[in-house]
Image (cartoon, rainbow, N blue to C red; front, side, top):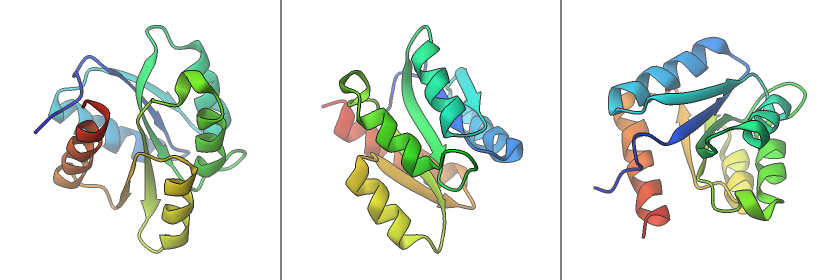
Length: 133
């Protein structure tokens, strides 16, 4: 299966530090090593703008204060320079409409909570297939 370069800088945006740590730990198990974290979409967008080297993959929670994952996604997709950055939404099970809204807004894929390593790896591989053609 195709996979992103493991040196890709990953941005993890979630208002729950424990969830950021969970995603980071799973990505570390897969082999990723370069992480940037943010507690909401506003901070995430700021991190995206300032990142050197640039962010190559985004994981974002949906439900966050100040700027939701969907609002963050729309801000990211509104700029041409970020239009091709893979963006994976992390949502709670019962948010089917949010998932549809996120896909319409340009999400590359989504992962439902609770997150587990195998699901995360599968979603990453499917996303890599589309982005690494």
